[in-house]
Amino acid sequence: MLDMKLIRETPELVQEALIKRHMDPSPVDEVLLLDEKRRQLIQDVEEMRAERNAVSKEIGRMKGKDERQAKIDAMRELGDRIGAIDAELQQVEVDLEALVSEIPNIPDPDVPVGVDDSDNVVVRTVGERPAFDFEPKPHWDLGPELGIIDFERGVKLAGSRFYVLSGAGARLQRALIFWMVDLHIRQGYLEKYPPFMVRGEILYGSGQLPKFKDNLYKDHEEDLWMVPTAEVPLTGLHMGEILEEDQLPLRYTAYTACFRREKVSAGRDVRGIKRGHQFDKVEMYTYCKPENSPEEHERMVRDAEETVALLGLPYRVLLQSTGDLGFGSHKTYDIEVWAPGCGEWLEISSISNVGDFQARRSGMRYRPAEGKNTQFVHTLNGSGLGMPRTLIAVLENYQQADGSVVIPEVLRSLMGGETVIRADG
Image (cartoon, rainbow, N blue to C red; front, side, top):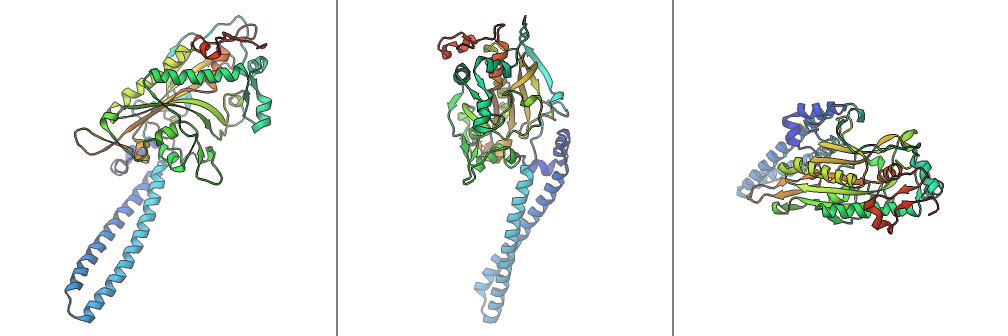
């Protein structure tokens, strides 16, 4: 959530940010009108309360019964008016917060202006694409032939866009998750195992509600929502808290299953297991002081890059344009891996500096050591890495002419020492 003072004092900055995101800037004017109404109501009610307090003192000194009663009646009427204004003020504040909560974060000046992801800027490309002396297969052919991806039974169990991993496929996915969590621990992150369901206010604090309500799964009886990413519960860990400066930075990593009502049109993105309603992801998350968030952002990008590099996958780093930037993001880097069977780059990580956007929504502050007023922390999040696209990249990059798949060296100890996945098991 943006600072109301920022919107009030520099509305043109916020409007320009919305225009760069190809959004309607008019909500800023609506916010300013409601904010002005709110401040006028506060002034009115404060003046009325001051008048009531002054008259109440007069009443105590009055001798005449009739005059005294007249003042009491007048103050009773004034009290009713104060109550009515209080109720109006409360509704205005609710409406104002709802409006402000729908305004996205302001892009960093470094973020390129663009229409969509085609305008993202490639920062660097690392590693060579593998050269095959045969036609590489996409995972949707390779997986079933190896007996490790079962599309039919996934649909049988849960409908379209679900699948079952079997045997070495299930073990490979588990190995990737375990290995990535352990790597992030070595990189300095503290492992957390959060609930896979959270309350609505936690989703609001992370910026998922109300904006992405239609993309989330909810329990129909209770205020419990399936997490779309571990970023959500990791944000909620310190909701409403005041941290001490010497606690920062806090760096967390967590694995969760993730659940999203992915609504995409038919086409190449729904082929295979690239997009699904349920997927696994290992998350990196950082709380830090505002002045340190750019440095922490670059650190998290390096940590995600190390994860990809150790898997031996060719990848590239892109800086998202304003047209692709997430709702709560100030600046985001994507990491994409090459999938030779699909013949495309697949995004497996987005690392975002959110600034104080989530902290304002969640009430997360820190107390400076010098005894200054508390300040909002900055938060950052990033996939380290996301499934199933990392699994896809491993299968397609390490496939062999005979249809087998070589297991990356860093995963072999978690695969029982196996070095190759074959159709015969």
